[in-house]
Image (cartoon, rainbow, N blue to C red; front, side):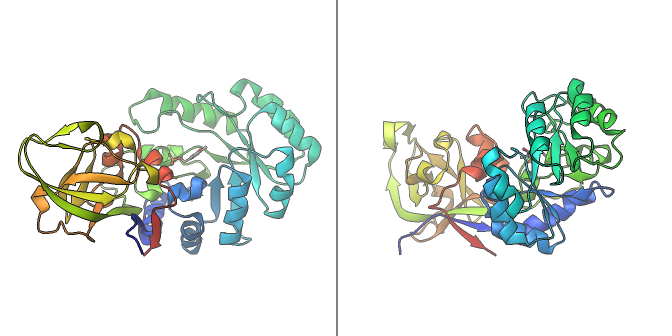
Length: 353
Ligand SMILES: *Cc1c(COP(=O)(O)O)cnc(C)c1O
């Protein structure tokens, strides 16, 4: 069998992160966002582990994701679908017992004329200008949903990554004011960043995603978030190169000295960003080995001069994990942890420990 890149998924760490994040808002239920195949970590395995740990509210983006999730977690979990449900999704909503999140007055109107007994949620837009009923339309929304099975209202924070951003408190108060009269309806505001902002952001249910997988904004002092995956690439070859030689396509990396290079099986064809060329790092035995030259479709070359003892064909270099933190690697590639983990393709073998 040929050597493939592999992502070892640390289910115990993901469960530990869920508990750690949950402990920050003790008065709230802690949900889990598992859209996009649990941010690339494998929805069945991740949701199964979280369900075993006691998680009972999950969030996905699509009804199809919800149906797959239902298979994994069984009948006793709540599954909310952020992107709502189109007419053609109704069978799946019923069969898999999904809770669609409705994102506009017309969508709500359509839903309540179809059915008034299936539970649904409503998104209120407090600042994203993306999805949701505008605050001015909340009264109209309440008229439309009177006598229906509206169970949850939610909103989403614009800039929860930045604890200093004044929009956070503004959105929190706006949302708090809007939901105050709705005593029998559950409320939800906080993604991972929101959970890090303080208990005031917890409301009834929290919606952490990226933090479960080891990424996202820096957690508050004393809060330890563990890596959700370790991404490694197998070394195919090790070669010595001399000063004035170049590495890779376009000759973008000129060597200044004798350099020991290793070429590994990982590339943008696996979803590893091409923008990490000459910017990102791998590690071997914890030693940093910079990416040299461009990222190719199937290959990356790294400088293993500092880790020459470990640089052997068949060995594995780490690109995300305890030695190569997700958000640091993402930053090198000019992106965020979210994009890095959700982008990893099928050629990356997922293993579960
Ligand atoms: C994806 C998503 C989340 C999770 O956000 P993280 O930043 O990954 O914690 C929460 N709420 C909504 C509406 C989302 O789309």
